[in-house]
Image 1 (cartoon, rainbow, N blue to C red):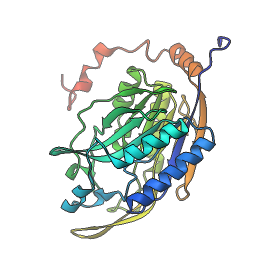
Image 2 (image 1 turned 45 degrees about the vertical axis):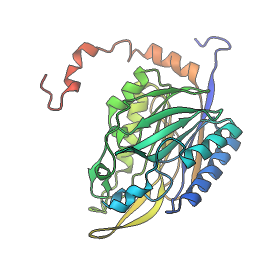
Image 3 (image 1 turned 120 degrees about the horizontal axis):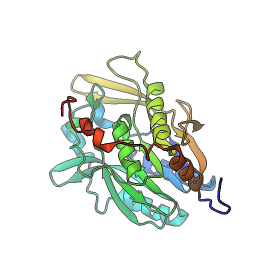
Length: 299
């Protein structure tokens, strides 16, 4: 039974757009869409992964390290802080971070008053054709985190992290009420017949359902060509950004070609009650999960 008056509603948004390789153009596009999301009532707005430019990890190129900037006084983060404060919205901001001799795929969480709540650094770093992130990024050292924003306690992970149920569970165990995953994923240069979009979505729908929390995924669209040492490499990003409800149901979705501003509203108190009564956290047996701390299943 829902208790009279106990409602805590939040409107989340997922953005989707094609990137050029010009920072100012992309940041302006992100700002335009954040404003559109705000006009639709959004409180928390997710922008896609590494939106300042092309997804450069198609190639292993020394000159692409010049794209990295320190977290402190980062110009795009500063601009989004001003925007967040003006609109009163929460904005996770993805960026390529330079930290002395280390480099990270990072995201800064900007609260609705413009306060920078801190960063998460991507934990799982892929390395395959077209997605050669290990050349650029150190494995993140922040651990999985949650951030108390004005509207909700949120967990934010990045792209390849979304394939790991342990990451989602770790964030919800720390109190995350909504999960957010900015992404850059599309075709596979080595196999144009491989289309992972349905698999990609189903895995995250499972995270939402298994943890009884809403989940927001933002992906880019468009064709991007990067010059590599072996010639041009091309990825067509498949978009299909979506918002899932707490049973894994899709409540808003984009197509694979169009710019989009998705929004959905959730009552976090109602979902909390559902999560508590469903028993998936009550009936956990952490003492039996030691095998998860191994690579080969041997304790």
